[in-house]
Amino acid sequence: MIPKDPFILLSYVNTQLRDHYPSLEKMCVGLGIDRKELLEKLALVDYTYDEKTNQFI
Image 1 (cartoon, rainbow, N blue to C red):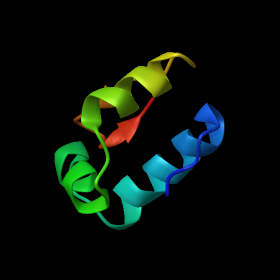
Image 2 (cartoon, rainbow, N blue to C red; image 1 turned 60 degrees about the vertical axis):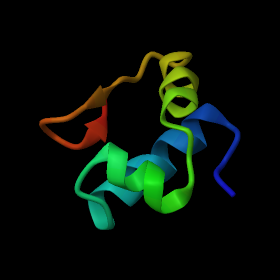
Image 3 (tube, one colour; image 1 turned 90 degrees about the vertical axis):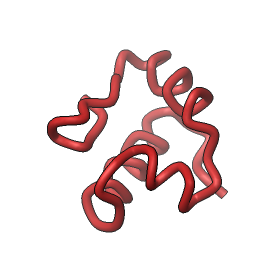
């Protein structure tokens, strides 16, 4: 289960990307997360995925 609070979710997702997954796509598949929903939730707190750095910024 992923965190519901957007700021805790941000920290969780960036940690997962840094430590375990080479891309957002692979993380979403591996954790069973809906990519579009994740992007929308983090956009609410003004964060977008940066493919080059593999993190939300």
